[in-house]
Image (cartoon, rainbow, N blue to C red; front, side, top):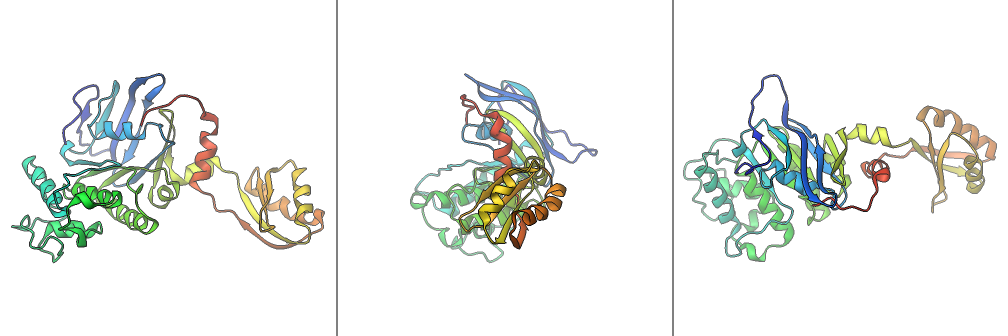
Length: 345
């Protein structure tokens, strides 16, 4: 993969004192009218899964493309602590020559890696003569092309022409072509956008496995997927990085503790009682007649909620903490950053 043709320095500086794979310093891409990226300081550790989240137009694709060397930045600097030839990116809408089979696409990718001096294996040693696939779809240990296609769930489609592939199959094939380059840094732009729930589960299981030996940065608008696999997360909105750090820290920092309470008696009476209490930051009666209560702190809620039940004259059936979600934390974080401008892909 070629580095950027200007604007941003892609530096391959190995360091024994850092565990960082990628850092950016004041990264700017100005499309005008507020669109683009505005001073992005990204920090991605080696061998971690980093999830980049944000609304449409936040700048996710622009940022990932700059990291991959496919777009220029207008200002700022990137420190890339892996060789540029060991960086691979999968776009959100990959396209292939329609007359090529899946096996031929992967074989072509292996050939490009060899021409560029890269390691053609997809993890492990290269098998002599492995480029000559005998039957494409077989994964018998002697066929690296078949192996990587099986790895992404396309073993049965190895000999099919890509012109008949669905968008989800093309996303899988794009990942196979990237993996055959044996990248140290794998960048995925909306990798699960066209996959069904089972396909998403398989993909993110694979991503979790990949982080044992390489760094993965991916963007997604499906926040449950990010929460499932990303150890760190960056929240991008209107071209600005609003938050960066451990996924759980985002959830803990921007969500207030809440409980789902089931009572014996009049749930409406409990709701009326809770609405007048200073420590309650939110309360609502759900369709199943349970009550969801949000408190200003976990300690206060745990001590005061039982007293409120007694005051309301209702019996307690159950009281369970509400699982915090990345989606709720994201909405809480971005609520104060709303505006009218667009920030580019």
